[in-house]
Image 1: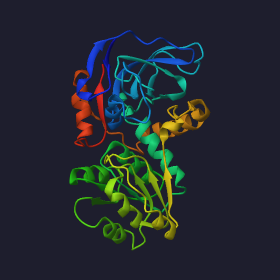
Image 2 (image 1 turned 120 degrees about the vertical axis):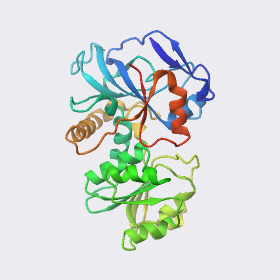
Image 3 (image 1 turned 45 degrees about the vertical axis):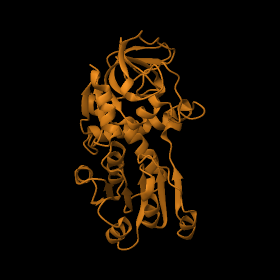
Image 4 (image 1 turned 30 degrees about the vertical axis):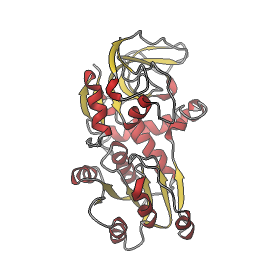
Length: 332
């Protein structure tokens, strides 16, 4: 089969498309003919050898696919050949076939196109897991940073679906417009003035009840000031490239909870592989998300699609923060 190979740590610009053997089927494995594979910022880190989950070259990068089941291991009895699925994979998404444990394979309803289904598991799974940790959201105000990206747009939609008023923050008018179209009530451009003042103006001076932040960086201190007393800040990553220092004194005086959310822990990418421990819970969440998508309660936009051969261009689109929403490779 054809696959993208990382044969040594370095720049994603060095990735090559090669012929490799198809992966072997495992006892609880599902073989998927990959139609689409997501492209994320984390891919550039994995290829560089700087990601928190270390890979050993040579390897096929990529962690999220949609496609069709072509074979099931003897331990799999609830999927069959021909089923449409999406999956979170340990690695190997940038190949024509992948074999992955049944625990992280999710059936896709007929009403959801495969090119849209690939955008759901990681972004919407992460957003839903984080937001539910913040408690009841009905009639609360949720501030979402990085709202023009795939994870940010997922958070906007899930928060709105759970009854929250959503304020989107993004780095350009185009990205704000995308967030407003999928459910944000208000938008704030990072680059045009005092973030704290704008959030306070939109919340009658209280601040946001929940802050969903996958960006980090220099704006983080402002986010704490923009959070309501007894509010919650959800830290999901550092797309800015900068890990912020938290002014703990402000957390203390405002009774703010700061929660780190690492969705990887629930799909087998933690220090220990605990995907089976959380499988029932995550499968239930994915059924709810895909059902919501099929019913039109959340909108899965078609990603910006690149040909298989354009893998470096696709990753560059994400790394340079030109993408609005999801980017994916069309494998077949």
